[in-house]
Amino acid sequence: MPSPEAILADLVAFPTVSSEPVTAIADRIATRCEDAGMRVERYETSPGKCNLVCSAGPRAQENRDGVILSGHMDVVPVIGQPWTSDPFTLTRRGDNLHGRGSCDMKAFIAAILHALPSLPLKRLKNELVLAFTHDEETGCHGSRALVERLAEEGRPVPRACLIGEPTSLTIFRMHPGHSAAQIVCLGKAAHSSKPDLGRSAIALAGRVLIALETVAEDWSRRPAARPGDAALLDRPFVVLNVGMIRGGSAINIVPDHCTIEIGFRPLPGMDVEELMDEIRGRVAEVAHALHRKDDVQVTLQRVTPAMLTPEGTALEGLLRGFARSPKPLAASFATDGGNLERLGVQTLVFGPGSIDVAHQADEYVPIAELHRAVNVVEAVVGGRCA
Image 1 (cartoon, rainbow, N blue to C red):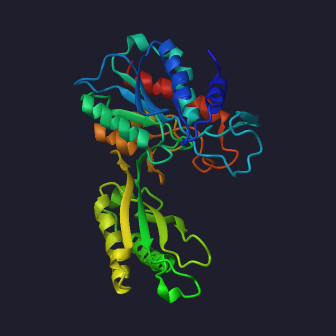
Image 2: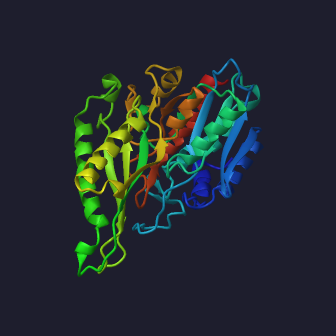
Image 3: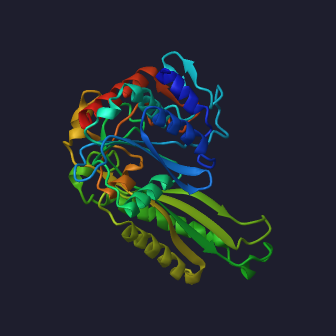
């Protein structure tokens, strides 16, 4: 059996940036799972995009005491980043392995694939499910489609789920969601020498940005709906970020359009539409004051749900012996866990590598944590399925 390092090197070599297909890496993972004796199901969502569900043991029915191990196959882009080695060639430097996706999150997938031949797959008492998703990095699109498909099929799955996102081997039982919205400001084009003949969309957008700042400030002072759970977060409130602005077409034209892209992170239990209503209301006040109420359009683009799992689950107990701290905490980033909760699943996030180096140039995973993850997979499957 190839070493965990060799399997990780093989996975990193697939340049699965979210804008590109994942079918090649999915085929490689599927082959390894089939060779180990697992059932493999492919769920294609669009050309080049698919989710994988690999399973072993008796199908979950009333008994849902098995486990789901989940990871996403896509990675973020490398363009413009100052990499000191080929990002798609796993490179060892000291005690670390560098490469795009090495920690986020192909190390956990490599740990699963390395552990498979040593697992008693033919003698499992409860179902083991491996769920590998696409396009997590751009809004958890793959897991959303997978959950919808499994729900349509009425397929029960194990209740416990482990997502191996990079947490430096810290247990996370909660994270905010991440919703994206688009605000389009319209205007009227005119020659810039006579700006009074037009209406500047960028000037309107500037006022909208000020309104968004007040929304963010209000949210930062608002008590959380679940203060006990929210206390696990370093920012126990809804965070709002203006991520992109695009507008205008030439310096000598009064701009007739400007688009603002924002993201905000609802806490568990919060209604995304209620938060959107607040944004729409504050933006409408600005437009009304300027007599431009028809010049602003606010649209919710996507929703990645928040995740909250109760403290003290059996899976948590299995992870404690491998964790840096026995007490579960909360992640600041979103994962596929919010979507998987819709299947009646209790999810914990725990994996090798640090989120602090994910998405950066020279991303890396410590070799020791990669090997530790193999032990985690063996212990979790043994404790939940064997």
